[in-house]
Length: 160
Image (cartoon, rainbow, N blue to C red; front, side, top):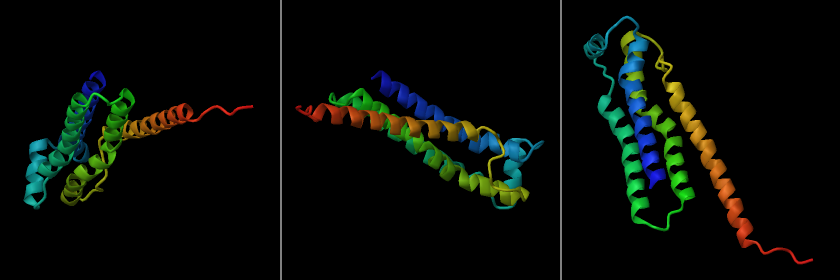
């Protein structure tokens, strides 16, 4: 249960930072010297927005999956610690594509409003991408180690 609780907290924290990045930090970095209310007004004036419902919806899906995984692990007594860790690592690894999808509309809205590129201007996207990369590497490593361990248990020793 400790792994499930920690995993759910980590996925939620990832989603919260991603939402903060999309809706506050990146717009402020993309339009330096302009406050957030003015950014919203400028975007609305040209028919654009940060697409907050889409961003929150996409990121909320990850939180929902983390909670679902928590419940499944709590209900099933046959789930190993390795399986629980793997599940949460995979959710964190998929955070990067979810962040990209969630931020795409906001980035394009900022680009169209201020005639800039649609990329991230705030450095806070980097920790998200790095976390997802490390989670992916950890999940692959954990899976390979577990598979090797299971294979060794199932393979009888060779008689000489």
